Length: 160
Picture 1 (cartoon, rainbow, N blue to C red):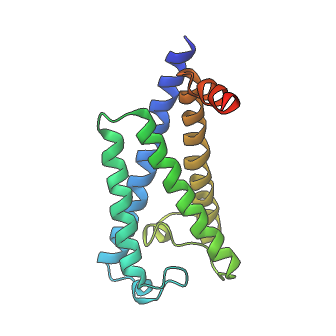
Picture 2 (cartoon, rainbow, N blue to C red):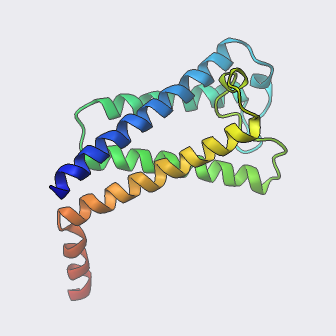
């Protein structure tokens, strides 16, 4: 029963993550193709035009969504999501350390169409990145725990 509940929860996690990443990818693409004024700015962290950063991020988000839709292992799906969540959080931390004056424009032009302030959207996107990382990490741990990998790894480390 526990394993069935975990699988159902994990599937829900992949659906939520895929929906979120699809939404953010579309927002980035709309921003680029609408010729929004921000696309010509240079990103202070990566050092490239925002247009190329948005296109790269949208492509990566789309690849992850396609990956989630395919019959791939739970391990690879959760690793991919945890890695992406970590990358977003590291980027946001670098922005914060540089004293970025405004919230992340992760949703691109789509953020301007929503009835929320940029700070509310920035907080939501930060919480989304934390969600991607932590929930994926939990499922990675549960998967390793259920397979006995943790116990095997610990006993191997102790006996070595």
